Length: 267
Length: 230
Image (cartoon, rainbow over all chains, first blue to last red; front, side, top):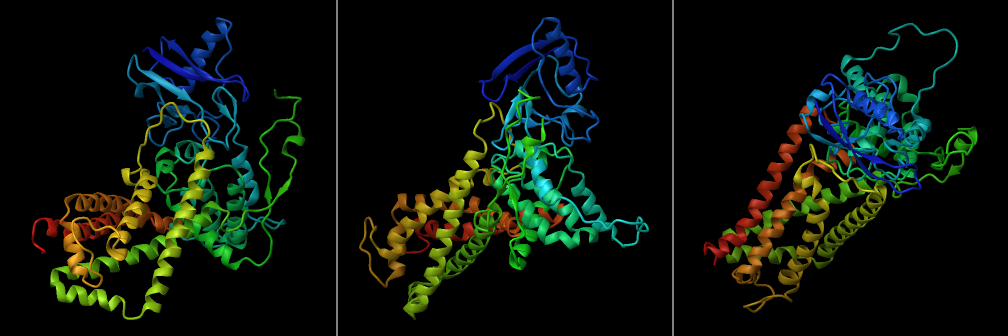
């Protein structure tokens, strides 16, 4: 099949970007979106042009590296599918695809379709962990966890941190991501000891980054390749509200957003 | 990338009101207070169908103690101010959160009501101000004389003017849209988690509560225009 790809090209953060239109012939319908870009890049390299930069790693929908807007929808039109798992048979022959990077103040552009998502890492660093004592590994199933709780935690833990929620949100809010990370630990007994501190710290870090606010409209969960439920946002707000009431001291510290790169390895 | 790029510099943590979550909790609580007022206000106003004597007696009852009345009014005014202040600050923050817009962006699941909250809100505010000037203050009363105390007369005379009724019906429909999303959204913002199945039920419930409330309100200008209430 033939496709026309309208791709955002931008050399770096400081230079102005614009759309370039590339016709791609011989697209195999079984190809993934990323493989289609690979084919385009091969032809660009042959012509001596700069290939399109995009992030990718596992190509099986579990690492969270890939992702861009395809025709105005994060990860493209197929629900619960990352860009690497999106096969080209879902498009019509001769269709034009508009491909844009995630756009958010918290995700500064690095190059073409690659954006800096370290803001999400800093939210995890603020409290996305549990404390485990060293020594022998505890017996399995030592702490009973009901199946309904385990399922809810697993649903939230499915988040791969790709940033599609932020990209799909009209306010560029990271509420679904932060909510998923707070919930999947907070509702399990292993995560209870740090529940308050986790909610306060991660919410504080999220609000230090230039993300917008949640208006509960649900675009994030619709775009999420892992179908994280909107419920996690309510769980985050409940934990945050409780923790704010119980707060005893100034535990909460946040890290200033770092968007620059040291000069040596990256330009 | 060397380690210097991730050097930790401590920053002051945003407090409750500085955080978007805190502001949304404030919006949920104040929104809930305003919804309670909307329900009470409707129940009182439906007394117009019981005739002038009952309706004016209800209006007089609201004034039985002016101190108490002003305490309740103060709670409502503070709620409105906090609701709008939080919304305005969040709006500014949200504008800054996406400095470069998408060339193409599709809405895939959000409702029309949820995407137009920043339109329905200010229009409803303008309506509330107009409404207070007309029926509480008595400054706007085209085509008739405002009689303090004779609320029944004021309502019938006011709604007999077609453009006032039209403006009321239009604004109330927008209030309905605002409530349709707000009623459900406040549970999320306040932090009451519920399953996906219950989310569907709650959204439908919010829609029906909004429809019933707005149908009740709109029935009054329509009854006046059609001559059912005169």
